Length: 516
Image 1 (spheres, rainbow, N blue to C red):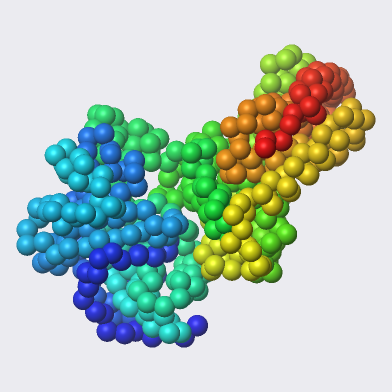
Image 2: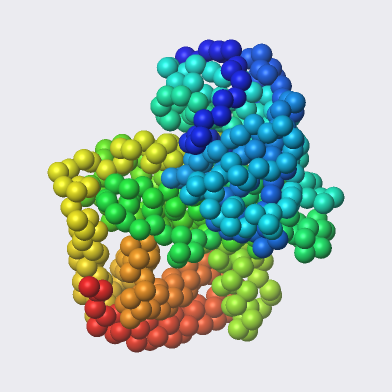
């Protein structure tokens, strides 16, 4: 895609502005080369000093609102940011200010600022950012994109966090241009998708500092927690297209955020347990995304199907790594505690801490796949347009019809669980996972009898799978005959125990009704 410099225009302050930008983390080894690349484009260089405000109880952060005063050159700008339709978008309200003081009357009768007005008396500075921005605007196939390389710090009290990121912001034109341009730079410099905003990182830092826990360990524990989804995050489905996109973006966000942690973003050196958690939750995100796409598959566009296929090999590769973590951290230590005779086992290396897996998470191949999936979801062309797609009064009824059929299939197989082959039992577990995840994002997980039966069954079938994975490893790696005989016997007995437990909860599942 041909791109050319255009003269940088001064900021204009239209109220509101929908800001859409792609942010990429710049690894240490790429910073000099990236700076040289930007310098060759003759950028504007601008120091930015921003002060962020919130209440002591973080009222704004909890409602995904950010309020700041920022010195841009010699001009103070007051900015209110509210959540947009997706993770790359923000509603932004900008006002020129003569001094670094807030004027909340600017937001009179503005619904997006209701929380600010309501808690005005409690607002106070919580953290600051000091950034040197190198930015240039590019004309890219008819769209204008601003590239901004930010280097600096986020500061709360005496604690600082480094900022090393590059942003591709759509100024005018097609949103696809920020992905096309971002992909080129990602490939060239090994960049990593970063969904965290400066305000998100600053809020976490301020929480740690305000609690008095300013040690490096405490800061890192707070900043680099694995990313989990909560049930209240799932969107309400009003039409098929938007329902699919909102749900899929939610799951892709879980994948991207944990992938960046697994890749060592910010140079964070996670311990074995943390890395294993990043990998496990990234895999959960992948499973959720696959479940969502299976549900919507009858309506999925050709381009969306291609994006889905692009993710498949990574699901398998990270799945193998997760099995290795399971062996190292859970099942083999439990086997030794149970009384495994002979010498202590030499446990396999935890896969999630291996350079190979971290390099895979940070690789341009995987990051480009995530970027392509993100771009496709925001293209507005995820599902095939059909008559009555968005006009039917209850579009989710078609989805429930699919899930009701899935439940009937699961119930049929569950009646003869003991007769199923090992592979069929594992497939049944995956079907149950899929149905459970779909019930979550359709908002029917509150139907406790069915949801609880699915969750309990998934738990025991997971234990059976763990036994099978460990059994296979012991057959291949235990050379001592006595040790191997004991281990395989113990695993077989343990599996039988879990099969009995599974058959009990499967009876509940067989008789569970689909929510009306």
